[in-house]
Image 1 (cartoon, rainbow, N blue to C red):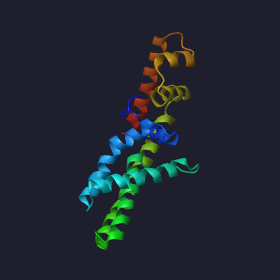
Image 2: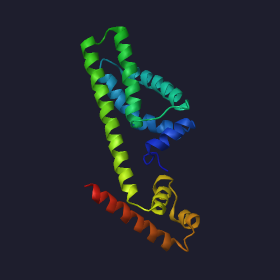
Image 3: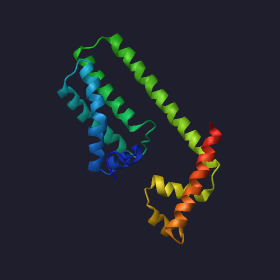
Image 4: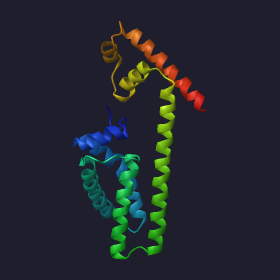
Length: 185
């Protein structure tokens, strides 16, 4: 799978497994927003690199713990760690007024709460769609879209006579999902 196509969950699992591809994703897609934030808030490129390194250490400690559950997007979580680390540095060096820090911290709290609500809404909609589908279709679509299995693997695993039958069943299951989604709107 290409780096661009990895989901948050795959990246998260990659971090747990210490997979280099997961680190590439963090640097390629997450570091620029951290660098932008830090350089716009009294920091330098080197400050951003240092904070991002610290962020990775914190993130790796968190993902390694058994009870850790990611409740926001991985990008939001990484950004929150980085921005909190940067704000601590600013406080320590007095480069940022307390008022600005308080306003920014409130913004972060509001942003994280909004992200959590969006995540819960997506989960509710997904559950609603699944409740309108057959169990067999849920398992088939999960195998194809979540587990990344190709049609040949699905044909063999689910016991279809040929690829055409598997593709036809995939189409029928997608139609069930579309009908379930249409009822939400």
